[in-house]
Amino acid sequence: MPGGTDGSDRTLIFTYGTLKRGFANHSLMQALISSNDAVFLGQHRTDIKLPLVCGPHGVPFLLNLPGSGLHLIRGELYSVSTRGLRHLDDLEGITLGHYERLPIRVIPAEDDGTRGGNATAAVEAEAYYAHRSFAEEMWRRSGGVGFGEYAVDAAKKYVKREARPKDRSFLDEIRLFCSSN
Image (cartoon, rainbow, N blue to C red; front, top):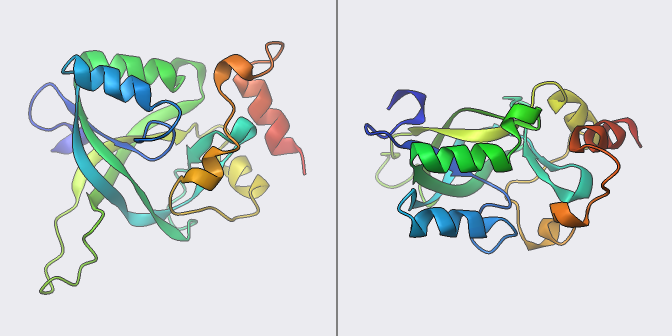
């Protein structure tokens, strides 16, 4: 399944933050499921350690800095149609430089590699990573400390878009966040 496709016109998407069940933006995933533009495939985790941090307004960012993270990241895997992908790309600000959708390898979350010595084969999917223009700064700003799963404690700090300052772009907010101590 190169490029995170599942052999049809659908793309496998690994979600790790506010799109997960029970979090602020999951309503978009529910709408995509209702319109048959997404199918929930289960809980998964990355097959390598990656940094997961929260930036301005408690927004979670997966950083494409292999070898820097301390955790295998837990999340959810979905099969998403081309139309659904456009909605997700819009939410994630792909054209604005907030995130970039890149390949990621994931395995079922319950697979610890110890069942009879046979680990489940990793699946090629795609995930929304912090844009490369600020990922390293975000990692430095976090003190090189991340977490393995976006959970309730981190979500308490999340501020919905409509409640954020209107006089600055989100990229401006990211730059301010990264430059502060």
